[in-house]
Amino acid sequence: KAVDPVEWSVRDVVEYFTEAGFAEQAGAFQEQEIDGKSLLLMQRADVLTGLSIRLGPALKIYEYHVKLLQRSHFQDEE
Image 1 (cartoon, rainbow, N blue to C red):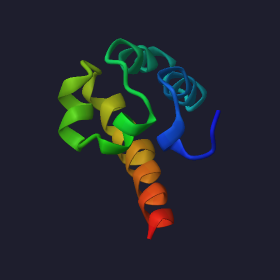
Image 2: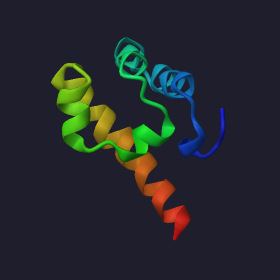
Image 3: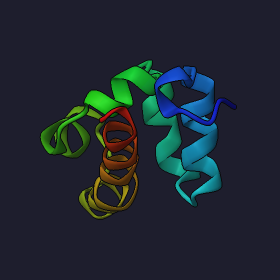
């Protein structure tokens, strides 16, 4: 898996969430074909409503994973 999430494949994204303890929800990223680029562009609403994941896990995924990946990726670019 590439270090920079922007280079992740759909499979890398699924593996990331599986390893983070969201194995059940990781399938949603597979179904929607979310790769690293797409993941970094996701808004809160995309995660909460677009993936058909239950609200609790969706909030955790967004707050603790998507937002952190975005923050570290976009800070590195500056």
